[in-house]
Length: 303
Image (tube, rainbow, N blue to C red; front, side):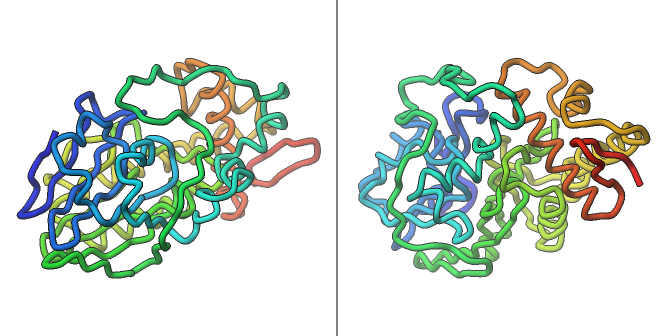
């Protein structure tokens, strides 16, 4: 479904709710037609002439943002320079996700456990590494001119190391990707995620002060944006505080995972893995802040 945001600028909304495996995308109809992200589903993209699109830009490499690539394989594809390797090298893809840590954290081999959610026919690929040919990479502050519309690539790491947003300053519109303002708070469970970077990225959006945010997994947001950003990152800060309270006594990662701070109603083995990965990212941050110390045998304690 196309939702016009401004002249020549349209959100491509999934026909289902914009939740994994779907995500909102952006279509810019200008001299050089462009699309940002590819996860809306083939049915949603039927409303545009995909053959006209000359440029595709990706916020990051996660499956729900790339699975529509076959519709746009003729277009130039660009993604953040920090994640370029994940599109050409399977080992880099596995390391960025953190799957190379699976056996260490889960104590069992990683196997084909099935899909996290069922996939419909308009999801044109399946999760896992897929080589995608980048025509170029994006860097922070890079300007992309499409005609009368000009975008600025904004490096917003935290969700992943190479996560980008795209700002259309003239219209005050920020496509914020997976800084998505959902009520449950951020997802930062990969090996390339960073609590500190995420906090800084949210602050940067506040400084940009957009009039409109188009997030990947929520409707267009125009009201109380600063307050929404505070609430969103507040989830992360509350988890930091809860961990500091728990770590008055030594705990290892398995023991911390039993508190279910991230996924209170853990549904499957992947959510348990992501619980541990997220906690691992919190521990990294708290150690860097000199608030927690690592003890022998994999235990952690508040300083």
